[in-house]
Length: 186
Image 1: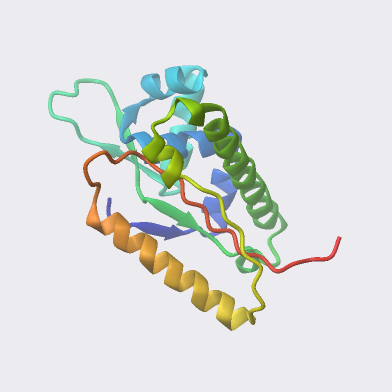
Image 2: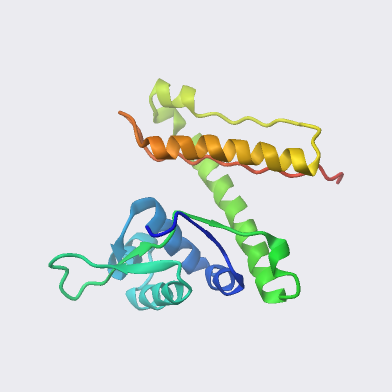
C-alpha cells in the first residue's frame, strides 16, 4: 500500500457511500487482493456490478489494480489504503458529501453491531482463551474536547503499535472499535 490512511475528500466519500462499494472495499481490506469474480461470489452479487463498482472505487483512488505474475486476463484489485477517515465538518456546504458522511457513519455503526452480535452467537464455540480475551467495556468520563482528542490520539498510537508489531502465534483478525462521543440527553 502506498499510504496507510486516506482522509476522504468530498469525491471519495460520495463514491464510498454506496452499499456495494462499501462492502467491496471492506472485503479487500480484510481479505486482501481479489478479482471481481471472487468478490462477486463472496458478496453474493454479479461480476458485472462488481467490476463496475471496483472501477468507480479506482477512479476515486480507493482501490488499485494489482499486477500478478502470469495473471492472464484476470484483473486483481486491492485496497489503496488500510484506513479511511473523515470529519463531517470538512464537507460543510456540500450536502451530498455531508449525506455520504452520515450514511457511512450509520453503516459503520450497523456493522459494529453485526460483528458484536456474530461474536455473541459464536463465542460458546470459541476457545476459553478467545472468550476471555474478547470483551466489551464502556467508560463515562468528564473531558473537554481537547482531552477527548488527546485520549483518542493516545489510543490510536497504542493500536498502531500493535499493528506494526505484526501478528503473534495464534493471531487472527480482531475488530477493535473506538467510538467516543459526548453524552446527549435523550
